[in-house]
Image 1 (cartoon, rainbow, N blue to C red):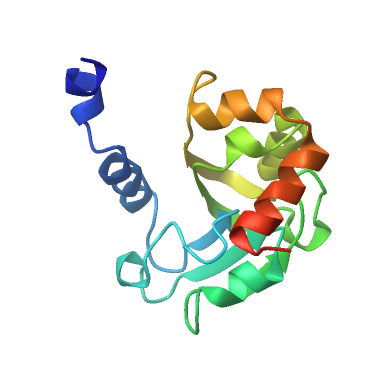
Image 2 (cartoon, one colour):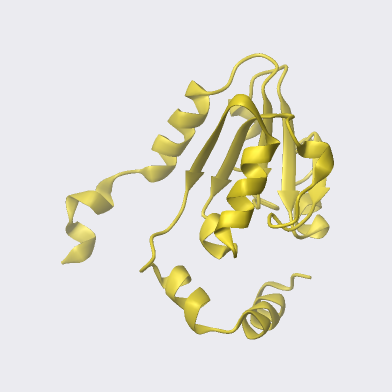
Length: 155
């Protein structure tokens, strides 16, 4: 039985948060990529002097995170460069988002441009054969977007 395999017993979110803790300190500027209403780094995990920026396609989803979830909101597609972010980010985080971005190479180029020298990207994403990744390859983007808008009541 696959779900009994030891690799499925790992708590990947804990490892993700551990990597974030190792790369944050006073004054860290964090860019949360695509988390919308569910910030990747809970406020209790953030250093007091940090700045937490949410980047998502949907302003509505970012606002649904509630007051204090983000210090700043950026509404954009990750494949579109946001000039005001270039060279300003110490830590970029992404949980289960990058597998939905195409072309990923453009998105990662943008993240690289956003990072300050020595900046770090901490990301968790599903593999090429996860249900989401396979669906992304099989379902045309236009149809997937329409279905998600209806199912999740998102713009």
